[in-house]
Image 1 (cartoon, one colour):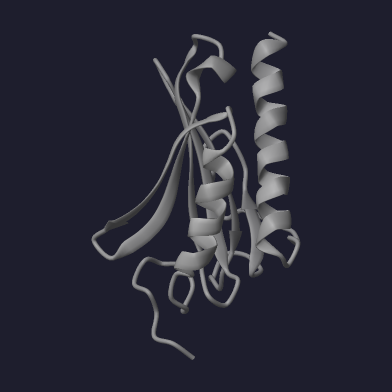
Image 2 (image 1 turned 135 degrees about the vertical axis):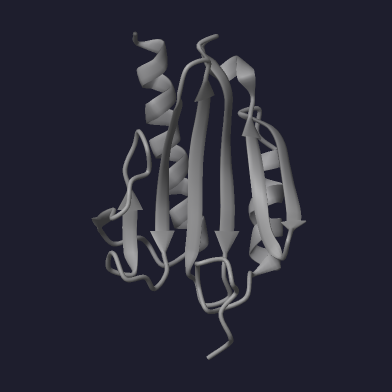
Length: 144
């Protein structure tokens, strides 16, 4: 097994080709204003900034951070910034002491421990599931 990444996530390295695949697909949508792969202090991830037009004015910023590992572990962290608070949740697959390998950290704070669950195996299915959950969140904003 590969040495730990040092980011509290998977013991495997980041799968850059999968991040690039996701980046290319999301950049082609009107829902996304920017999708950038960054390497900050050895933490390679895709940061997706959602287009402000999809959100009411009460949401200052909405973004999704994606880490996908070569062993198919992942972290997808959605966060909204509001004037007086943040709202966030996280979909994870990685070894940890607080939950099963597949788990969800629920909103509004992405609290730990999370909720044990199961996720699809394929990265496309996981991303589609997460984007559907984000769409539901956006619909909730507009229905208020």
